[in-house]
View 1 (cartoon, rainbow, N blue to C red):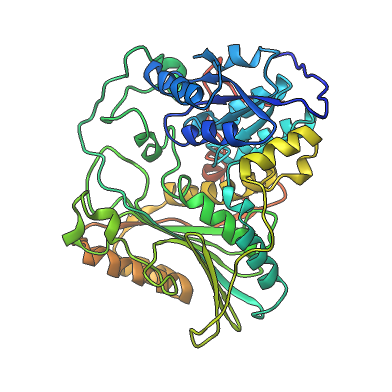
View 2: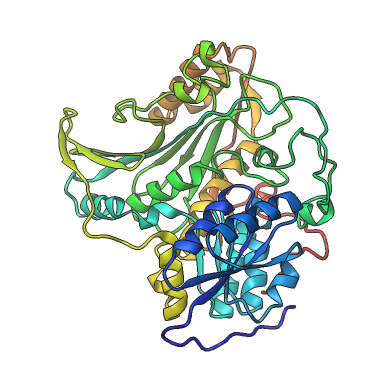
Length: 470
């Protein structure tokens, strides 16, 4: 285990930050650390030499001189680093966060903060045991408009919440079916696989497309959709996972090297109100299945005014609130705008909030403390578990199985209509209906379902093992 060490911060000391993993979202981390008051970027770590070089260039352009690493364990041994941020692939998130806590570092861990539910809870435990400030990358928690809207809805201004919908209608063309790919020059593939199962690269691109393979990713619900899942749970005001969950969907409309659903409805059966989450990766019609126009022709949910397909709708007795992009708007039952939320006062950026919490040693001041992001990540994990345990069934069989739940039936019918516009017939390309799974939120275990509980964790590869006892 790495030995913890830390320094006593003076009032004017910069927080010395390292960024780990930045082929995608992590480049944003570099820019955000450079911009955050009181932060100083001092180190970068990435396994891909080409990516590392791009990160160094961005740091230098921002005026930072950095130490470079390819092994995060060596980085964490440095006494010249106070905190890390990490945006590696999902299967590394929790372990890097735990190692950081054990090394006496504070950590900003991108969403989802885990690849599975158990390891996310282990990261929460590590943050408590080592008294570390650990933030999750659910950046909407720093949006002042959403803070205002959540308080307004939970204050009863539209009556009781009836249903909360999260939408991830995001363009996801096929990643191709080539069955193999090339490892980038100089990259240590064994370390890149890390805690996951060692498998050959069976897709064209190592980077980014790992999202669509279960060994390393969590599909679009755990990629983009985690943000909307988090906002939906925030509106509901529930601070635990749902007691029942069910999924229906599949990877439909193309045959490629991906595994995760591109079309899915997940139903979280909270006592307060259902949370229904939808993923659509296909466009609004087959004629738009061209990568050049795909992203500009996605479905847009009711109330979004055609402004996008990624957001949240909170249906209440007296109307609804829609969050799409940066806008948050309330409507009455007739669809008339009754309020547009502009936020009350400025809030620090998500990264600046993390830096401030590190300086003040106040994890409670985080906009997205690790427990919050753990719970929202967990909703993605349990939804995918229902899908993994499901079976492909005919349209008629699925309708029969869910007909007693009018909301689930309604959203399945909408899914079917969307697929038909894309030339997909559920009569031949069958969707997967997952079982209703009963869950104990206190124990974070499924009730009487051995197969489901087995999927709450994974077998880890030494030496990249998430510890049983942090």
